[in-house]
Image: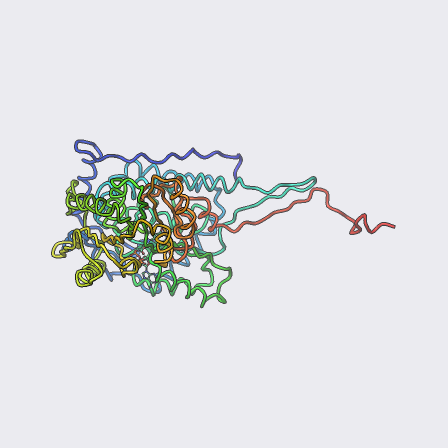
Length: 542
Ligand code: NAD
């Protein structure tokens, strides 16, 4: 029972370290990377207080060095998923009754562990597992995750403070109860911060969780588990399973106690899960909360008045950082004919200057894509663009998977605004540019709005306020995160709550109170101090 109205520490965004030559953080991460690279980790399932080793293992390899094995992980069978659900339900009894300040303290402690003793580990493991360069690892695995944890504690206390009015003789109170059942978190490979936040945000609000990380992020997921354990997350609050995603999901969704899903990943997978939830709806004790942030086909549109160097830099960073494997990565660009050549030439200069290779060499800006499936898919689109009359590759276009899954940052220019790569999410370092006639600006805005099923992020560049306002209106439903004179990626927790609509997700804005509200079921308590003892109202009088 709380005996005070506690204020939580005011969150401030974690400063991004530079990793410049000679800095202590560079030395620490380099050492840690080498130790992981030459070591071997055996990652069990985490079910209740047990570390379960099924003996049915898969190797963990590096996308940029796929013959190097850095460890193994154990695959779950159906019975392990049932056990994980049971462990979550058992832990719920105590965890859901834990005073909120204790939950807050655990996750604030996790944030401080990441900011300090685990920083090199979480970053190096992300470089190893997901092939992020050190800067991309730092802004994701360290800073964004720290921000999620600290800001969510603040948002939680803001939610708890939000109380209804009371009238004379009556006290109204709202209790933000955790959901009745357990939460299923399914996470993607591309952000260590998302992987940790999806189970953690639900757990922070008093829920217990079955978490299924991506097969391609397990190496850094293990570090997250270590951090949560050291921070004091009790056994059974976050249970971790890997293996056949369909079997795991079918087992979870068949449970009558399934109370909500916190998903980030591709649109098709989320729609399939939604369908299965619908098929099971009569079995559930409660209507499950469905939260999913999914794919994107994020745009940049430049007006003829835009600054050409700014637009080019937004394309180079927005499309190619982390090999374009951000849901927010710019992947379709609309340039006016009057300045298109100049902008494309700047982008070509940038691309020619990118260094590509292992993240172990800190001077590399570009590393590998996540796995062979992704590599092969990207190659098929690049090869097709080479053949198509309405597309031309103006930069990059080479690839090599002999050592790692390396795809050169590639720029396609198309004369067809509905060319396949203008609408399909490729999730790699490929950007497609369509050049429009300057006079067709307003028509082009309609094209931007209607070309893809997604509506995640988008950016407009212009020096003309009228043009910006026109784009602002025309693209109101085209992106959940809309950027003016900036690249469409790089959202910061607490500043730009993130999420999109249409086929891009339920838009429950990770890194905001809106998201946390999905993990509670408010109970209104009305207490009357002097309770009536006569049913007759005054109007009934003679
Ligand atoms: P993915 O959909 O392949 O995998 C996501 C998770 O779903 C993984 O844990 C995977 O194992 C699991 N999964 C795969 N198939 C499944 C199935 N049939 N049933 C149940 N679970 C299944 O996505 P990914 O390649 O890991 O991540 C990239 C995708 O995530 C892109 O589409 C990207 O746009 C999206 N993403 C979106 C956001 C956002 O905030 N909108 C953020 C990051 C990534």
